[in-house]
Image (cartoon, rainbow, N blue to C red; front, side):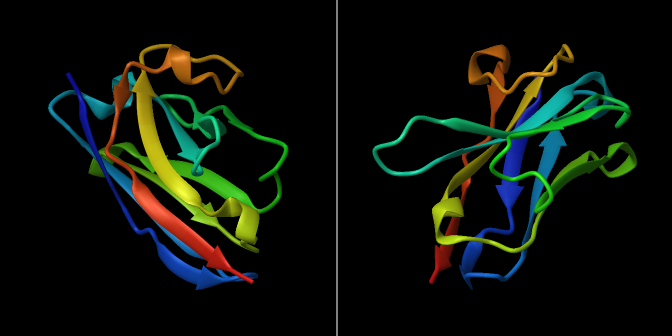
Length: 124
């Protein structure tokens, strides 16, 4: 089974940028379609972006299109989320997740493997 460890969260002012990373171990990273999710206090977990195993396909939530970019480096077993033009409403715990299959949806139930999360706080 794959284990996932996120990093790169922090506090930033509105309009700023952060780059999240997620390092995978324990299995062949390139087998998995990967996703980023986020959860703010008292809110449901929300899908942010998803990328296929070979990076050919990606999908974004409407709320982050044009501001966030998901990418991966299979040689380094690492998933990234570049977040630009951050807004206070982007504040949340961000999780990376893995699944064996590709689908153009952002349903958390599709993902069987999860990291512990990294906190992102955007101040106005």
